[in-house]
Length: 342
Image (cartoon, rainbow, N blue to C red; front, side, top):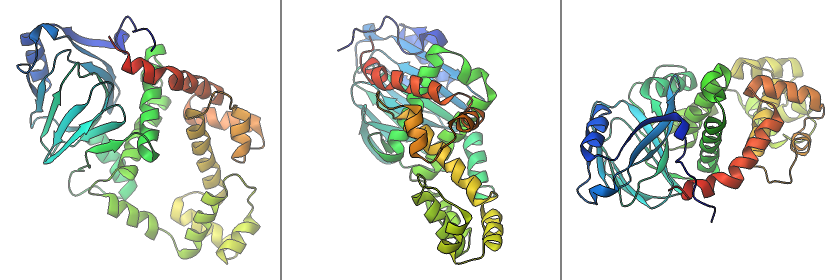
């Protein structure tokens, strides 16, 4: 095991710290939480709250030091994604109770009661999304304002699929915040992070709008456009031209281009390039130590690496090599460091 670091995660962004139970309760009450430390030894209390507020999202680290029971008050109007770092944490959200740990996160919804029970230090990384920010993203996806608040299923599996990608993005954000101020001071990087988190949560994690969002995606285009979309997603690493799309769709190229742009706002080639860029970024975030930017980019159809790098930096606010370098540091150290907190 790695040596324990001298300071907890995000110590340079400390917002509150106390070892006094009354001070801890008073502070958390200002955040609309009621806490009970009576189930543990008050001498163990070491409340630390580190983090940063972005326009619509908060990213931070939390520990209580001693076991506690915390209940949210109705005054909170936000969504909390919690990633436990050490011992299991019990969360009851509405009528659903779950036991979470380093491989299972949980997300709370503001319309549901929320109770957390910890049995140790309660160390966790969390992302808070304001109701306004999430609704703004949902409105963009739906094309209209939501009629009722979003309610998510509580448990998030961090070992595969959407959950694994979400965990990597949060880990990368923590790495950014520990080493620089780019995430909080660069509007492009901040906006992309908020959009990524909210979109992945809405499209990837079960909620009361999942069926509607799925139907919107399926019904937005005629059958010929859907065939082109399926083909493009299946051929990300292959050369694709208009002639290929004509064969796939059975529709003349000019008409096909109009139908596709009417449905998605971009041409098929622009869509393909955008998806390829997103896939490259996902691959860089999860890359093994021996992988290179060139190999990943070439494997996803980018043959002009100079142009690719320019487009990547414009889209994500950093170069591909910077993403890969930070991802390698995160993959090598983040998990061990989180579990080795003092």
